[in-house]
Length: 213
Length: 311
Image 1 (tube, rainbow over the protein chains, first blue to last red):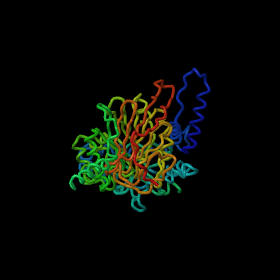
Image 2: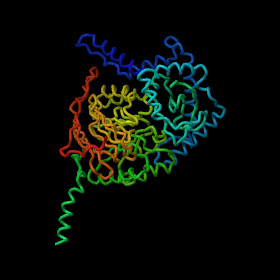
Image 3: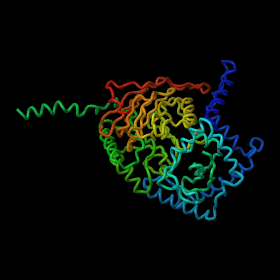
Image 4: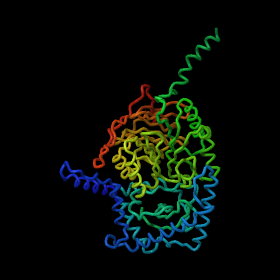
């Protein structure tokens, strides 16, 4: 979702809204965020009538939902995440949760969620965001917050290194990809896309060379 | 006679010793009084000095809470890190009943949302209303996805005519050489701010203090030098009203009616910058019309702030 393009779309939407009679109440113009969200929904739709990649998208959503359900099921007992003044309890719950997820997904491997069918779709969705002026900004953000090279293990079920910054994800990339259920988030490390469980700090899956820089 | 001369010298020198250390806020009873720190999670001498100053100034200006603009805990986040990077340096404030409201930076683990002393209520983004007429919104600028944008839109819309103050990590406007303005976040967040009449944004990420010219009606501050400094990084630009990248800093703020008063202070207790922002307009209650507040103009306080020590 090229943000400059979104501004044009938002401005156009706004201009169209002004064509009615002055007295008639018109809805407020769509903000670039609203336009971006709608555009993202279309690109990641599971409806074959609006998205040629609907089948792969539906499969991806089923898989991330399944992970989220598993996470919810496991985040109980000692692994319950609850507010506390004691940091030891926060860490203990996180460690317990990570251990339970690792055990429950002991056989998990790369491609279980980012299946071969969805990987090219993600690459196609991401590619336009790395082009032009916004693309330069996007690359700059990715570089800016990047963890030290070689510190993040590209391995399913591995822990994200606790002493490394968690790279921010440019908003334009997030809005062009399918929305994720909690606790999953996307992260870009180098040219690779990670699917991260942010509560257990675990790498759930990844796509190598998801973007070209 | 010699002793008298010495006393005279002391009396003359006293005012200059406290110069720049006077409170420049109205300190009115019942007003919203708070402080802001940023990039504060490094156990440095600067962090300890800032914490001491916050505690000392609280004696004169009884602020009730502190906003944190992110990077609350650098590096590992083991239980002892929560202590050495937060609860020990700020112990006097915590014991004094000051509440901290955190936002997440790129160095912060999501586990922090469960830490009671950060008052995040288990959420990466949240809002709170400490006083009638004032609402704060903590944004997770690391991950501005559709869910958060929709939440922000709804929360801001529901806040009516309150002061709307957002705080988050990545500055939408910045004159920093290392990071600079977060253009991509700005292109999505700023229109939402304008749609709902956000008045002030406090951010961090850059390890300096910068007050920027109000942009499209929103006043922007960067307070990211409460424990880390990046000397020489502030490239004073047309955006800059005042900046300082050579001293650790924090801010005190007070809202009285339609005025927000601010005072940025260094780790020695000396005022770096001060002024006020007038909120002259409010969002039209007509939901079909989007209006912006009148551009707030930061005006200098009667006493001029210290000279900018930036390049």
